[in-house]
Image 1 (cartoon, rainbow, N blue to C red):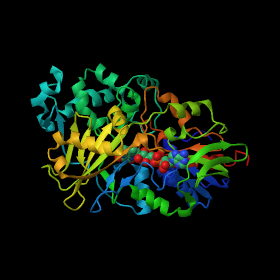
Image 2 (cartoon, rainbow, N blue to C red):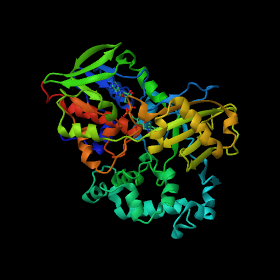
Image 3 (spheres, helix red, strand yellow):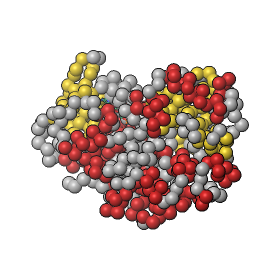
Image 4 (tube, rainbow, N blue to C red):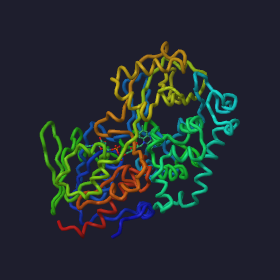
Length: 484
Ligand SMILES: Cc1cc2nc3c(=O)[nH]c(=O)nc-3n(C[C@H](O)[C@H](O)[C@H](O)COP(=O)(O)OP(=O)(O)OC[C@H]3O[C@@H](n4cnc5c(N)ncnc54)[C@H](O)[C@@H]3O)c2cc1C
């Protein structure tokens, strides 16, 4: 059977997953959403599954921090937003009975902090000189800038960019050779305009516009996930994003082996073979198939010398980039700022400052400081204590009173998380050359996870879940074709 398309996967998901008649056992590497959904569906069909997870909890990059905060406050270190367009996420939320509520990222009191001045979006025109906008950008709102530099550009590319079932045309492949910054500059955008637009529509590039693929960007910005085209309500998962992973893991229980980092993956004609650390001892399991959901940043440290992988897969594993992101959380005694839903884009090392707990009860609040790109890499190089101390220092001029109201802090630097090695996929220029190799089946080894999505910018829970469905289709169609 040819490789299923994105459309096939969606149709199969909606009409019922295929039976895994010929599959006798499966090892799943990773208990993030892709691994959990794969194991959940196989278990429903009675296929014996073992999930090997390096960490001590399910969910991977869906990670809700509940410690060390007081009064039951919590904050999201990883994913936090889901929209009605997240078909797979919404379906699994319904199936597991996990609820949603409006996202904290909508209807915020969004503002800019530039050159030490707090500027509401509708007052940017009064500060055009300070900001360094080109003369022909004076008087434009950020919405106008986005229309001029992003929406008009996407409209000119035509409808194919937004087509649901998507393979890049030669014209889009040309764009894959250009960076996002290059395209914006060629269209006349000043550095100041790019800087003002960035928090609203470029967040998924992780602050690296110089290397991010313009093809992946055009696709993302013309789709329903973008801030500039979003036509759906934004939600968060009630009680914390990790509730979905926890609900899926509850149904798998002893099938998941935590603290079991995989160190070697191999295969022969008869089985897939996975070696992992079990309480400090090497243990090897063999199964009919293995589904590998570990991000490639982590997989680079797994021995694959006898995995019989294609050259394309090795290249993809070596080259795939992930965005650098750090979130620092500062618990404050009370909300000492006037805004009801504080959210500021700054030109300091901290890219975004926001109240991470606007709807959580009690006087205390957690202020989230978000770093991306090289600023995140610099912050990740600090010790956790230094990170909190320096962030608090940098926050004081932005939010006067921060030092006085600060109680405690925590942080997650995704580059330093050994089994993530980055936040989410950062499709760089030339990404289209890697895409087919990233998700291709290799004998008895299947590859799932956000990075294997059909979408070049698939860094989301939804596409991690979609990838699980694709892999289940692959397994069902190949069961009878590979000798056991
Ligand atoms: C800061 C941030 C913000 C985000 N915001 C959003 C958002 O708002 N909305 C959204 O939908 N998505 C968001 N995402 C993306 C989303 O979290 C991910 O795309 C998705 O959770 C990835 O799921 P996965 O199963 O592919 O990978 P992971 O969640 O990374 O799962 C992989 C699992 O494999 C394990 N593993 C890795 N290596 C090994 C090994 N050698 N042995 C055993 N186990 C191993 C890991 O510990 C992990 O549990 C965000 C992510 C981050 C980091």
